[in-house]
Length: 136
Image 1 (tube, rainbow, N blue to C red):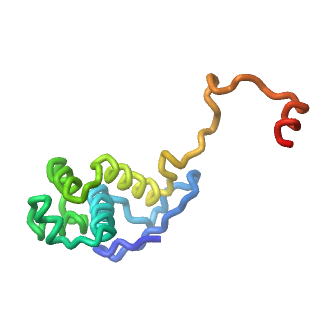
Image 2: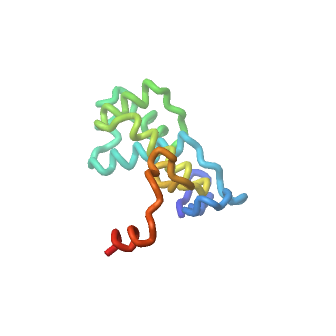
């Protein structure tokens, strides 16, 4: 469960891929999820807003607003912040997308199990004897 501190709305995260998004859940916003990911990286590195804003060449206030999900950062600004944090932009976007999937009650794509195996990966069906020998 996470809490959206800006609005005080609490969202339940359901990990069951079959469950629809709860009607009472607040919609996940990309800018908020990106901000959460950026803040987590900065804090894990033990860095201050001032340090990262200086390295990224963005005002401290604006970086703070981006981290709190109050401002939509341009792709150029996101790239600059990611460089300052030494984190690939693609990784930040992937983690933000995973957070949105979870908030909407879906498993992130990389955690989903396919419903079937692609035909080119299936060579032949094992006989009962072959299977029992294999698991011994």
